[in-house]
Amino acid sequence: MTSFAIQKVGGRIGAEITGLDLAGPLDEKTVAALNEALVAHKALFFREQHLDDEGQTRFAGLFGALTKAHPTVPALEGQPNVLAVDSEDGGRANQWHTDVTFVRTPPKASTLRSLVVPPYGGNTLIANTQTAYRDLPDALRDLADRLWAVHTNDYDYAQGKELDEAESERRRVFTARTYRTAHPVVRVHPESGERGLFIGGFAERILGLPSGASADLLRTLQSYVTRPENVVRWRWSVGDVVLFDNRSTQHYAPDDYDDLPRRLHRVTVAGDVPVAVSGEPSYVVEGDDAAHYTG
Image (cartoon, rainbow, N blue to C red; front, side, top):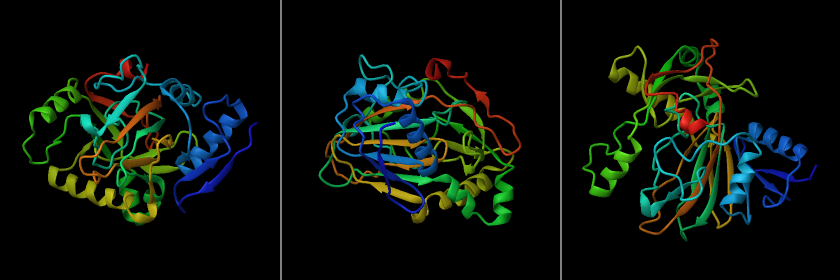
């Protein structure tokens, strides 16, 4: 096993890993130790790495089979597993979310690698949804354990604003296939057994509730996720790699860097079907099982 150091970045989430060159080979024991750290700390940060797209894909693949780049958005040319997150091409995810929760099997984990970083702003915030769950008052936690929410890729990006031509085209591509999936509001982590809130920006409504009550309850639950004590902020430098557990986190990229360029590449590890406290699995409401994405 290759030795490495783990330095916590926040009390509840995040650890910086030092002593590893991700471009080189990593043995099974090292990968197992990194996976253990991922489950414990939710987000791992690696500074000053020297990966290309093939290297990032190889590193992500150490943690499991890979998904395609995205269910609807085209991959980077020649790199079927790589999604370009580019501020100059609509890649401003200015919303709290967990990646691709609108399909039945969302990713296990996501890797992000920075290629172009603005001189200010452009950080990534990552939140611990398991400590958020533990923060809930008992009565609200008991209620959340029984709730299900429909997640979809077809929601109101405009938030009441008129879309320009480029934004309309991006929305058309993103919703080229409509997916709606029912997931438990509280997900049991398949490795640790911990419970965490499983909501975020793709959660459209809570099943069985009127739209107003659903929106109010989702906002209330989401407010626990985004409490400052549950959030870590990562300030990017070129070459950084971030690996986060998509089963126990949400993330947000504030649009606070004016018109400056910002470019990251994302590669995601395929996940399993979320399971509720009751043991029931998620199920498709509209669309298909996204097998073309999850492989």
